[in-house]
Amino acid sequence: MIMQAESKKIYTPEEYLEYEVNSQERHEYINGEIVPMTGGTPNHNKIVGNFYAALNFALKRQPYQAFVTDQRLWIPNQGIYTYPDVMVVKGELQLQQGRRDTITNPLMIAEVLSASTRSYDKDKKFAAYRTINSFQEYLLIDQYTMSVEQYFKTGNNSWTFSEYNDSDTKISLNSFSFDIDLGDIYDKVELAEIEAEDSPQD
Image (tube, rainbow, N blue to C red):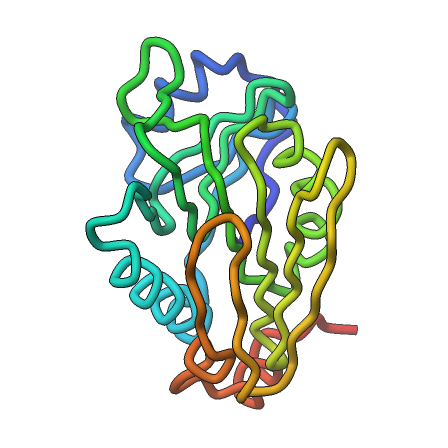
C-alpha cells in the first residue's frame, strides 16, 4: 500500500474507527496515528488484480476466503489497523470483538511494494504481521522489477525465504495449495513505465 504521513495527533483505536467509518478515504492506524492511504498506480492495481483473480478462482469451493485491498485487518499485539493488498483466511472469519468489518486471522498476506513503503513492508510491517498466531505466509511483490519474495513459517521464530525473478518460474504457496507463474502476476504490467514515474527522487 501507498501511505503518506498526516498529523502527529494521537488517537485511540475507538476514535480511529469512528473516523474511518465516516470517511470516504481509507486510513491505516499505526502507533496512535491515522495515516491516509493514497491511490496506487495503474500497474500496482494490475499486479494486485492479477494475483487476486487467480487466487480467488483457485479457491472456489475450498475452505479458504480471499480478500483484496479494502478489507481491514486488526493486529492486537501491535495496536495496528491496516489494509493488506491481498489476504487469505482459512475457515471461518475471526472478527475483532464488537466489529463486523475487521478481521483478525489471516493465513497468508501479499503486499505490492511501492517506493514509499518498501522498507516498512519488509521490516516493521512484517514484524507486526508475525505477531498474529494464524499468519503463516508472506509475499512481497515488487512493482519496479519482476521479483517476488516469499516467506513461510516453519516453526516458532523460524521462517524460510525464497525469491523469484524469472517469468517462467512457478510460485507455489506453502500454507495452502496454489500455484501461479510469475509472468501471470505481471501480465500487462509496464515495468519500465512504473520505474520512471514512481521511483524515488534524489
